[in-house]
Image 1 (cartoon, helix red, strand yellow):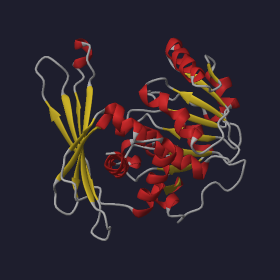
Image 2 (cartoon, rainbow, N blue to C red):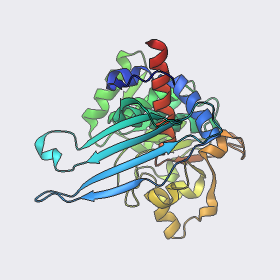
Image 3 (cartoon, helix red, strand yellow):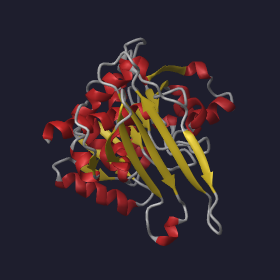
Length: 323
């Protein structure tokens, strides 16, 4: 980290420097090693005549025992009123610093880092939790994050067919067509129950506030990946899905932030003891993962600044090598 030139890396460059096979490997090491991750800062910004806006600050840094140390912070603004203006409501920037000197090293596209590290972390969890022969993937949702799920999962499992369901069938068809153009066998589906019953892996990336995935639909051996719900009011899977599953989470914050856990715990459907492990424990091999081909596993993520820092560091170091 002797080069003091500040790199400014746009969305395209940031994405190109985060291929999923390498990113999954980077995250595996990062979760196993750990870093300092303070509680995210959450600030409400009043906007006259519009919904309140939100400012999020997500810092993380490497501890002193690490030979190469970085410090990073993701800055996220959420302005719901932008919808009426026809512009994105969420903007995200990542700032990376030298962890020894505090010198700024890079400014990166935060949206790209967030989307790619999110699906890569889910693929990493699936590498421990999904059956080794899992090959049929159901993606629930067709937005920016959902569109990346198939490629991320192909880095860890022999995905041969992708079904896509979305509340807007036209969006599901557009994503399926895009995947087919890249050589993947992909189908837009309208019968969510039938698609869930056939799937080896069910990955949801939605903003749903009522369950979409029913536990009774899950065949033995299914892996369920819940990416979308990030507030206590959001929900992608029902109580039966939680009852039938061995449950894993990315971080302990999921117990307080994710409606898929908060709601069934509050209702007494499951207890916090039902959570078998966090992703860092899986990566350190501190706990057992899938134990049989019939076991149903469920992974719930809310995101962590550790993954942001790992991805940003990977981009920066790749940029140095590439010149």
